[in-house]
Image (cartoon, rainbow, N blue to C red; front, side):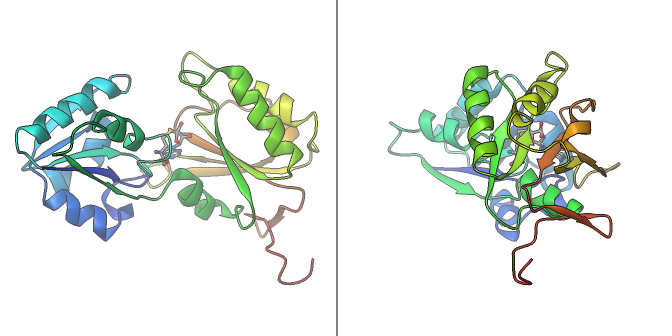
Length: 242
Ligand code: SAH
């Protein structure tokens, strides 16, 4: 019995890998957050759906496991990559003691990569991804990771920079980074990557502090060498010796 855990990329069909498309074709049933299922509507119109809201992840994955146990080929879909703040680990945990269920994780383009391409090439060198959501990670752990990334001069990608309930997390994160990092550091914001209305903005860390963002935005903080070149955010690899 087979369960696929599929990352569908940031914007659905056009940004999926061929492997992900082929795996979806084999499925009888698809489980996921409604918005993500809508993004891949053309590929799943003939399939049964297990749909639920964003906060019902555990229920949705359990329902997917039950459907697979009944003999269906099931896909659990996440946006971006299923292993990056996605469903892959939960699904593997739920199937830990299910020897008859085979889970195949199929990678997708995570927001760090798709958003980086929109901005230019900010993640050419070492970078860290940090989620500002404290729903599953305590805030002091998030602060510890921000300080570590800042001290290491990493480019930093901030996922979940805001939500309806948490409107000040980006400002708090910027204040921590500003303890170590220059306010002139180049930053970029990308919203609705790969979807209708995609947009991006360049700014500085000092200004980012006072910028309002929503949960459909991914934030990029450059390292000490990141520059703006022809309107693009670029971290030089160092080939030209600069
Ligand atoms: N598994 C996803 C991440 C889920 S966490 C991935 O690999 O990309 C949700 C966060 O991801 C959002 O708050 C946002 O910061 C980022 N994100 C996901 N899709 C996005 C998109 N299309 N445009 C901009 N940011 C996105």
